[in-house]
Image (cartoon, rainbow, N blue to C red):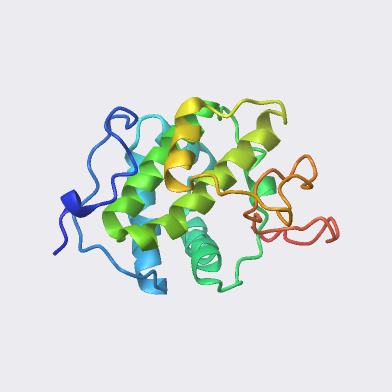
Length: 201
């Protein structure tokens, strides 16, 4: 069984808030539908027990966890495995949440990355970590305004997980319209889709 001391240590002790350690399991070399399900259910067990995140999620999902968790399995399988089965809209699903502040996003990220790191070997872990960080940043910009400054601790995580790559003349980052700041497309309604598409979240 792989030990936690072999993990990639994306979460430095100085950046890592205090929460109970993830259960020690054998870390997978490749994501599969089965271990993604274990990741999702294990992560949300930790979310529900967390004193900061638990009340926010419970206020929204009380009585609906059995519906929500399979959707999250489909979401991550779509992102990581390319299954293309998820049809919800991430931005739309998160906008109505009450009481969500930047510290909730930071806490969610630390807890998610720690759970991923405990369950996957480094190359596989990054396949979850990079989109999670970029989606969280995009959700915050959408929620708090495009002039919102991403918290330093989140930017530090992104810089560790996905260091900036050199740009060449063909890089589309500079031409990306305001409101689409990151290369990872968020699953859901695209700019060319009608207003009623992607709403089965």
